[in-house]
Length: 298
Image (cartoon, rainbow, N blue to C red; front, top):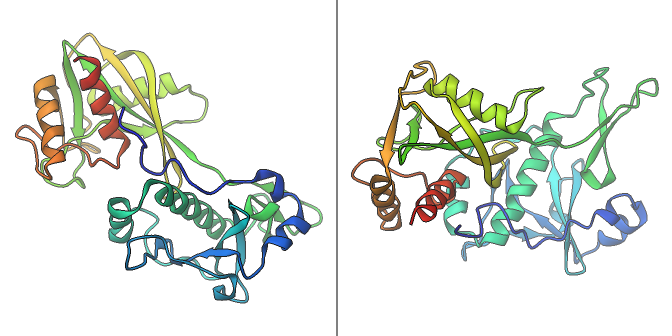
């Protein structure tokens, strides 16, 4: 497995022990503290292609400050502005550029901040009673201001299974209409309430491709801050290669040989598209899954 996987390995120490200590948090809000500059939810980069960190003085007076953690002894913060961040919750050009140029630890720091800021922006009101909420625990909680409610809300991630399926030495991949031309990737879908990861894999594969998956195994995970998912990479097997595609979600689903997958990955390293298909970008967990499968059969 090629490491590190994108959005993992942040250099910022989350310092959970400080989050519940208002005095310790206030003591970190000095001129040495760092504020991650963001354009809405997009990263702001320096001319050297690094994250642009400012000081707390750069924050708007009515902004909430989220404590990201410690960089050595310095506190790291992100700003939740009163207005909802502009732009799409999904990855746009600025985020894709950051994935291409940022060092792994900085990309992970940005990813965590993006998820957290986006969550705060979407949860200004209590889901129980509709009253306003306020930031608590350094930004890792929001509390309802209604004295009769007092509900506590915590940042969430959405679990998503993403899986390769193998049958007779071939790999099942699909493409959605929004993919770049020629791009194929692993099938994926959200885990639904009341099901295990293994059940989610089997259900999604059957829904999208009409293939019955078995013997699901976990391979790797990836935080994906668009807007806030945890990609759970799995591999499974199938006995019957017959495909019945869900045409409402998929544009094409097909089986690829190990040679075709290998060639597609090699083409990606050269910045090209493979002869049989275009592999997922190296920043995607699907790319890591394909590499894992090729290496396992070597």
